Image (cartoon, rainbow, N blue to C red; front, top):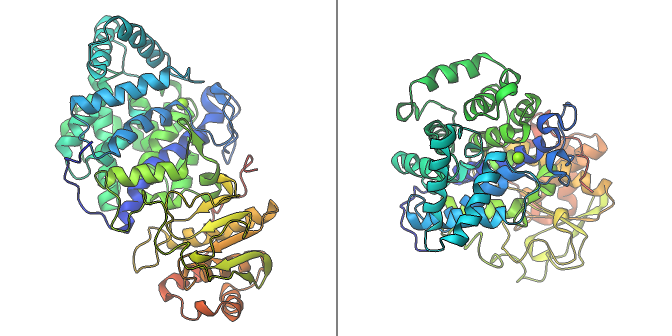
Length: 496
Ligand SMILES: [Mg+2]
């Protein structure tokens, strides 16, 4: 599908936040799954235990993200989501998904998509987008009850497809919502949330009212109430789109980080996975996908066979109008800096010989049974041959000035995941492009974590064995001197 929508060019931090709108939503979904409607008692912190109404695997996302990927896949082609062609494709993917007999699916959506599968067999000439919109509209006229949270929970990719274009976001959000939820209030919720996501990605700040002049005046009071009340206040009726948005916004507006906001959203109770998926989209757009803990990125997964890296790639393409960046990422098979040197010899970490420090040209099968990559890799390079997908962890850490949303969190979180992999008995290859800054800095943080020594001293020990690390970028080294973020998580259950 040809790209037809002009896109603003995004800097590194904006791109991380665009990715976060998808990755944050998926993470919130998987974190909320175990507790959906009291499936198990709420606990602090919430953990990606799986189970829930769909008996999911640990880290598996549910219908919220499954449906969001349908929109994301079309957005990643660079298509204008308002066109009949795009809506047909999204609708076809919804039906493809419904035909897999999803483990958990909202009653309204299940009935509607089930009806559409039957109707399509009877009237094969009706375009699928028009078919769903017609059935949804008829159902709304018949029942007056189509304002569930099922279109809001999947709406974030709409914002990625039309960044910086409020009219397009408005039109696409309503059109997508109407495929299943014809109530105008559901469409308005999608407009409001996508406008807030767009704003957060581009500006790096929260403003949930940026789209308020496009929706009914009642939203102003609803948002005020969300700011006054804790998420739990909305739990009794958060299957309704308005209360779901209120619960999500109540969690987001109180959060000091993405992990904090997701915990607040789940702790609110009720439709925990959906409220956390909605909240996670805006939290990711505000704080960046890089702030989703690596321990959770390792295990998050779901239909249609995606893991975190697939969401990252599709979100980046959607935000770039369907095109890879000038280096070919994320669609290129191998990045030009990796695999072609052949001379890279990994150096054992001075505090733990089970961690090997290297540049990208050391990425060869058999070098280790786990990999932590601190630079972008191509589509064919992950996971490294012989390494389980959950044991090849990619970290979004940019070796440039002012290019990271939360550098301190990224460095210490990367060190924590090296520690987790070692605890699980893996040998770990820790690498970036040239092993000049990112590798030694994360290696120093890891050394400090396991020895309890000063990170600056740990860096000196690394530098003594790693000649390429003589002059790491000072602004990245500074992350070692900052306090370790409190939410560097313990290992989640289910990481094995
Ligand atoms: Mg769900």
